[in-house]
Length: 167
Image 1: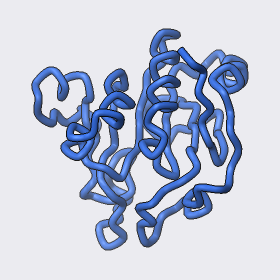
Image 2 (image 1 turned 90 degrees about the vertical axis):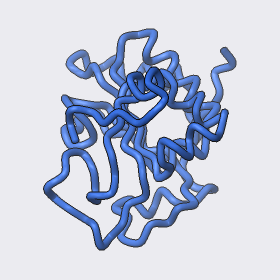
Image 3 (image 1 turned 90 degrees about the horizontal axis):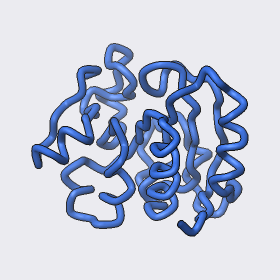
C-alpha cells in the first residue's frame, strides 16, 4: 500500500460516546455538508488541519493497550476515501473494530466506488446528515434520529441495509 496521508483535525484516545466500547477517534478535516448545529464545525475547512500517515497514527494508537476500536469521524471521512480505505484496511489487519461516521447514506455510498471501498472493511457505519430539528439525546452514538447505525458487513452481504444491534 502507498501509505497515503489523511488530513485530520484531531484525535481523541479514549472516547466512549463515538461507538461501542472505548475508542480511539480520528476526526478527519474537511466537510462539505455543513450541517446546521454540527458539533464539530471547526473540522469543515478543507485547508485546515494536518496531514498524518498511518504509521504516525498507529504509533500513537499503540500506546493505549486497552483500546481495541477506532472511529473515523469528522469533518467527513468519505471526502478522503482513498486514505480512509487504506487506514481502515491496515487497522482491520491489526484486529481493530472500525466505525465510520458519514453524512452520506449507505445507499449513496453504494453508488460511489471510492466511497464504497472506504467502508467495505468497516464494522459499523453511522450514516446520514445531522438534522438539527431531529437532534436527540436518546439515540445511541448518533446526533439525530434520522441517522442509522448500519452493520456494514451484513449489509454488503445482503445487498440491503441491515441495522446494527445498537440502533
